[in-house]
Image 1 (cartoon, rainbow, N blue to C red):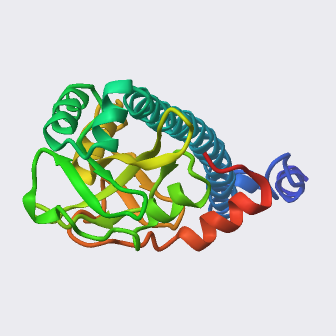
Image 2: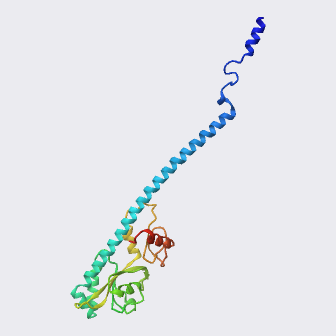
Image 3: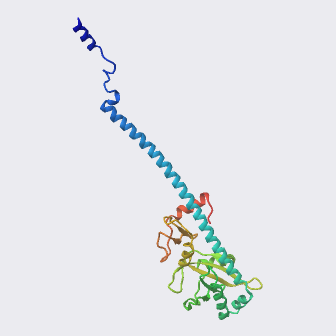
Length: 261
């Protein structure tokens, strides 16, 4: 009887006997749990990484926009200041008399004085037809050349108001690329008697732009109204007139929701 009792008790399952070690102790359950935890950690990491990326991108775009606006304001202020200086010289009675009399020595004296102003690079004077007859520094090879085909002459002579040109190649010196700012010269009776201009070589423009404290990794590109490079810190542009390859996209964006500076 005692032997049967012992057998009976052995036959009764004890708590935990059917699940020896628990569900987590089984190999497939361990692998499954590890995979789930890995995927959960991966999703969380991707989510946090995306949040960090978006935050960094937003901050970078905001910084770039601020820098771009600052640079645009700087260039606009520089051009306005240069136009103002040119106009102040074009209105001087002694300069007007020298232009009317084609007094080259006197005009050179004024141009030499004009060159001392910050923001003034090369200077020149043409008649109302666009014939160059005075420049400073002096480049004799330019005297007498008809420049009426130039964008700057067509712009200023269209309504005889100040004008800023697109990029072009100079005809003097080593013929660098430049952009011109020009103003008409009026006599005492408000008749146009010529054009006073300053050609700003692209190297001269670059020196001014480089004073802006850009992040070393920032790509900076400045273009004229025709989409030609005035400055770039990534692309070679000072040897030949270079079109900005993304200009059609930028132009479309400006037409769609912005204003050009």
